[in-house]
Amino acid sequence: MGQSQSLSTEVEIQATPDVVRTIFSDFPRYKEWCKWTIEPVASGKKASDLRTNDRIKVNLDGMAFSPVVKVSRQ
Image 1 (cartoon, rainbow, N blue to C red):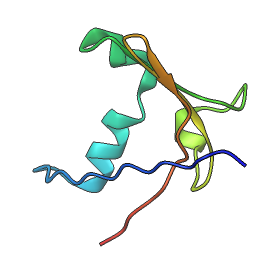
Image 2: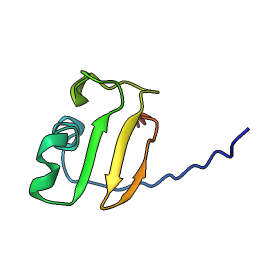
Image 3: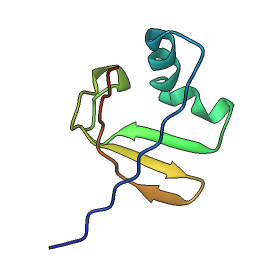
């Protein structure tokens, strides 16, 4: 069985959760401000449809991985 790795980080943002989620889930506009690409693994699924345990495809300027979506509510 393969190894599982985990990375967790926290950032405080001076905006409401709804504003942050709207900006973060606007994957097509990422290219306007960074070199990343992010998209749902499931074809046809929009970022706004992502739920806990869904997978996304991430490419950070050549470093690609497929993390699992987790939601933290405080």
